[in-house]
Amino acid sequence: MLKLGGVPIGPNNYRSPIGVLRSDAQTSDEGIPGSDPDYLIEHHMQAYGIDYCVLTGSGILGISVGTDPDFSNAISTAYNQNLADRWLNTSSRFLGSILINHSDPQYAAKEIDRVAKDRRFVQVLMGSGSRIPFGQRFYHPIYEAAERNGLPVAFHPGSEGAGISEAPTPAGYPTRYFEWHNILPTNYMAQVNSLVCEGVFEKFPGLKVVAIEGGISWLPHLMWRMDKNYKALRSTTPWLKRMPSEYILDHIRFTTQPIEEPQKPRHLEQMFEMVDAQKTVMFSSDYPHWDNDAPDQVLRFLKGDTRERIYWKNAVELYGLDLPVFRNGKKEICHV
Image (cartoon, rainbow, N blue to C red; front, side, top):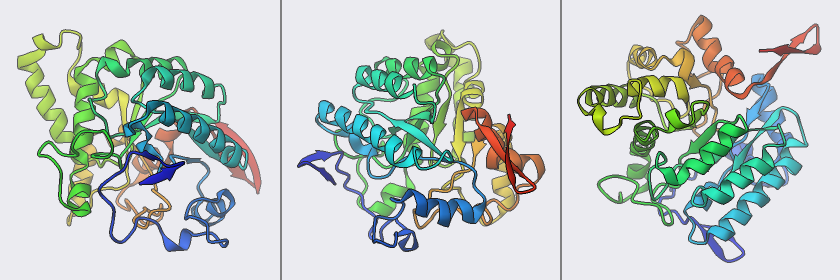
């Protein structure tokens, strides 16, 4: 439970018994791992040649499933201001995510409009735990504001089953963290299914969604099942003009961490083919978690343009970045 002024924010019953943070990411003054901008630049970005980091916060995503929406709204505003002051002002290599309380879409939309004036913020961010699926009209003010400001909407796991959200699985509440952690992709399946079937991408054709840290290999099965059922049940969703899988491939992006790791790497390659990974997948490190993916170790099977697109090109295109290029020791800008 995150304790802030005595008011609980999205208490989660599922905690890793071995922790989730790297001990070597702790700063010299014993600050929380990942809490120091300069330390992160030196020990993560410089070490792996990373030009930009899109920041997604830690321990704060439960605000959307807290019981007091006004308190959660205040926390989101304070967080966004602190992110700008402490992180984005430190280096142009940090890019911000506008944290919102999705349980109050009207306030969230105003917060998006307020913060989006600062172009260092490149996406909207909300926890993936919820009381109702993300495609329903209740959330439309959020998507309208995001589209109006040209920002993708990202959701991040960790708040499933917390606070006032529903049970983290369709079967109810797991017993332990291990069981809870294994089944998190079912929440992502439900949210993606809802976004498509409720016609969010028809109503907001410019909207892009980023499903952060939810895995990938469940996606082919979901697309196949949605397309099969659409052929027989399309009359129930007359607003859909295309096959469900087409909306997913055009509007939703997925991240590599935590990537599924089958015993035979070629099986993951096949999965990447099935989801058009050259277009839909972006690298994410998940630093400073202990199970984060080092860019020089993960996805070694990737070659050529596929590797380039997943490691940086897809992100550059989604977020509209000017990519730094270093020639003869001098920094130039490559407009992509």
